[in-house]
Amino acid sequence: MTLHEPARFFANLLVPTSDPVGLRGRLAEHLGRHARCETTETGEVLLSSELGLSRLTLEAGGLRIAAESGDPTGLAYIKMIMADHVLELGEAGLALHWTGAGASGSPLPFFRAMTVTGVATVGRFRRLTLRGDDLGRFAEGGLHVRLLLPAEGVRQRWPVTGDDGRPFWPDGNPPPARVYTLRRLDVAAGEVEIDMLLHASHHDAPGAAFAERARPGDVVGMTGPGGGDLPEATDYLLFADETGLPAVVRMLAEMPAGRRVRAFVEIEDEDDRQALPSVAAAEVTWLYRRDGARLETAAASIGAGDLPPGTVVWGGMEHAARRAVFRRAVDVWELPRDRLRLASYWRRGQAGTDHHHDD
Ligand SMILES: Cc1cc2nc3c(=O)[nH]c(=O)nc-3n(C[C@H](O)[C@H](O)[C@H](O)COP(=O)(O)OP(=O)(O)OC[C@H]3O[C@@H](n4cnc5c(N)ncnc54)[C@H](O)[C@@H]3O)c2cc1C
Image: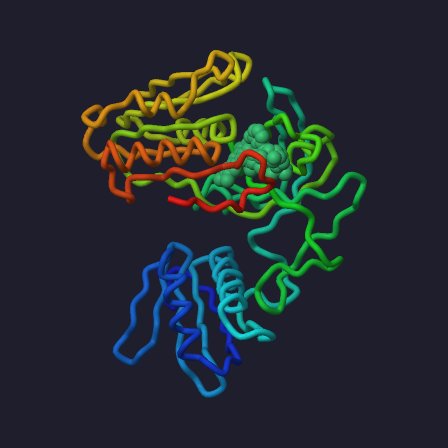
């Protein structure tokens, strides 16, 4: 390596499958939906993304997966994603053992134990300040994190890297996890700020219940970062309810001058309004649910010719509202998918955030 070549991190896995060709094809098909996928003249399958590169090669004894990345977090994500897919798409009972960087038993690069240092009530949100070590990597590659929420009174033992590249929990099952947004991040101070909504069902909900009882000194697990990066554009149209508001705060705070943003934010009433500082030209419309205003209606009021060419549409909101905005964006505004970033952040009547879009 010369002085100017960036460091690379490597790991290797031989999947002892009896059907390496079939497994390679299924992995290429599934992972190719989220990564660039090409097959070389020698039949090697290459999968590349912002996380790094994986090579899938047939070998005596199975399918060889060679992974590499420019940073330990990227490599750890690749190892975990590969293991999840191999275990889902391969035959039952496969034992996976990665070799190379990030050995079994080592700390997970994408995990931090975070200590609550501040709790404030802001409208219907609980604003938590969390402190942790070495947060630099959380400033790039995504706005969101998964909080791992110990049950009340439980002293949680945290995961390390497992043999198969996935988190290994020394006490067995992991605690419930919920997705949140870093509305503010101060790497030098080792501090992040998260607004957690105390929604109507918060007593039976691990995320909101933790937010309600959190006190300085409590410890919570955090993995990430991921998701929320916007494609380059001059004009943005944003839709958010309370759960998407922290992402709007962060996007506007980080958006450079010269961008134009039109944002619709649906909240219960004026108590939940927040300052949205930005050097971009931002026009924000607050929609009060109490008065019957809705994101769906706001989207329906925008006609086919109303959007500047090249507009990127982003949204974080309830499942049904997201679907209505998505249909409007595709059917009426006729936007191509690469200019749409509309996500369902929660679903009425359903716990957790693993509900899929059904476009
Ligand atoms: C990328 C992403 C970023 C997110 N960022 C944030 C954030 O910064 N702040 C934030 O507060 N949320 C955020 N969310 C939403 C949050 O993850 C969900 O609301 C999650 O369901 C909360 O977990 P819980 O344990 O409180 O409730 P769950 O156990 O998941 O759900 C229990 C019950 O509460 C209902 N419920 C869940 N959320 C709401 C809600 N908002 N309003 C009314 N009822 C609800 C469910 O439908 C269910 O019936 C984000 C979600 C995603 C995908």
